[in-house]
Image 1 (cartoon, rainbow, N blue to C red):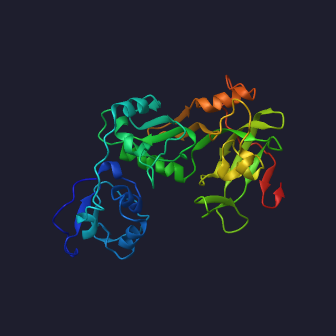
Image 2: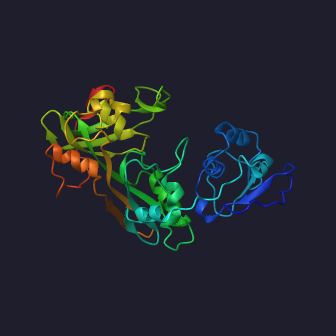
Length: 350
């Protein structure tokens, strides 16, 4: 974000200031931009700024979901421009050790895109109580570029695997479009409690977010939810105790794979939020961490062609798979495909 401009635009309230959107903030939603640059401002206050027109985009009222473009002018109310509690904070400095660790995760880098193998336990973005997260360390991945890398999709904090970034505004816009069009294929590997039956299929179960005692949770619903579809196939099994399963989400709902795996009666190992006690196996060599890994992604490259990236498994999953007798060496990374298979739907199997 550029510096606050002290000269208010015509018609602005006294004390209001204007910010010109920098290249690194192009294609971000206005409400998310405000939350990113004014993290101390309560969510309700940000929404009030937008609802009452105290925040203006290029001189006019703006919706929370408006996509910002390089060079846009955002007018901020006096409280945002002047109050120490909500002033923009400078990007935190990345320590040498964090920078070195982050660069060691890089799986692919070119002029347009960057892909890393995100470790489990590292949050992608900040939030309440989350001080250490990827978004705060992205300057370490500039590699001399003018713009910092831009997130184009997300992974849960405890999910490991392929995470793709755009390296310039044009690439960010291109990738945002392909994600909206669902022109991206993502393959997840999971170890689940129990064995799905049948061994391959398609889950079509609508999902909805609902609050709960332990925070927001995604629920399978028969009405009022959003369409969610996931292909799956069992790669290997350990009797009836556990299975190694490949999941390919065809839609991109929050916690989709975790919720669908639990709906099959086979929650992802370590996923107490969706599987309760059933998600944990009391056996030597089996970690209690979440066993969900974004194994591979295929994405149209902004410069043409297709980029395919594969991420090695994290150590806790390798350890568990060894304990269960699974051998990931030479395993097939092929996507589940669109072959006809039984479907799980609210009305039963097709």
